[in-house]
Image: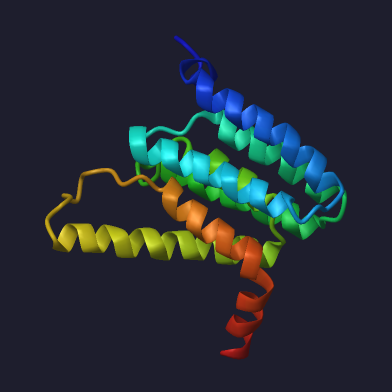
Length: 176
């Protein structure tokens, strides 16, 4: 049995290089670290959309950069929220409601976000995925049993939560 890391060497090498860059940029809180974050998510989304599979390298690179960011300014609630999102998606993957690569990818991406951003990230990805799935079902392009790559929705939602997370959270709280 081969490991997932060995099956797709090109994405893994790209993710490893980006992960090293992410660790370096996130340790100094560079404005470029957000671009690396979005590029790593976009790489995973591209691979998932093309193959229906996400290499472990994307999640490892995101986790390396995210842990570096967390150690230089994160809080325990941020880490707890990332872990909780990972566990929820693991349960969903076990039930067949999510893919096996979605949980590590989402958990690693959540390490880059504050806990409020993680809530927005998870909610946004679910809403975007649900709307796309409903549209594909209504137009009969997909059946209920067909899979839908989730990484593109994680990418869109993660980028939005990273860039506009604080603004979106404030707007959400103002509704209540």
